[in-house]
Image 1 (tube, rainbow, N blue to C red):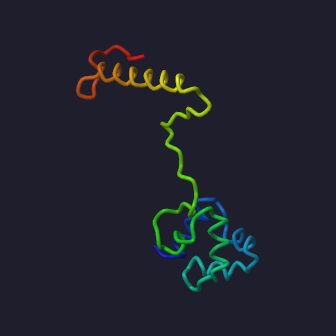
Image 2 (cartoon, one colour):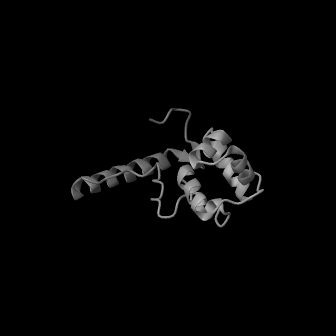
Image 3 (spheres, rainbow, N blue to C red):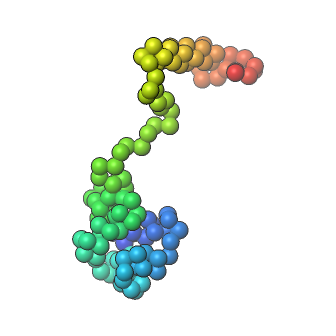
Length: 122
């Protein structure tokens, strides 16, 4: 995937027109079109502005990585992770026991990935 492909993909993901990005950069639309078509390359300051605008890393735009996350960006939280901050150690331990109990109970209700019976599991 080329710089232009990645740039165009980011623009389309945000639902923007070429003129929108060109306006943000303070350049003519035809100049921006050349970036997307790999007809010319922006300078390093423009690449940095584009990366910030699209919330991706410059390395991603330049094709040095497949990960669009900006460098130093905090990792995305796992949606299955429960935040226990602010709770006492006793409360945290009780929650861990409850989760483990529920996990074991659910495992006991299944055989080979299928429910033991047709009853609905609460």
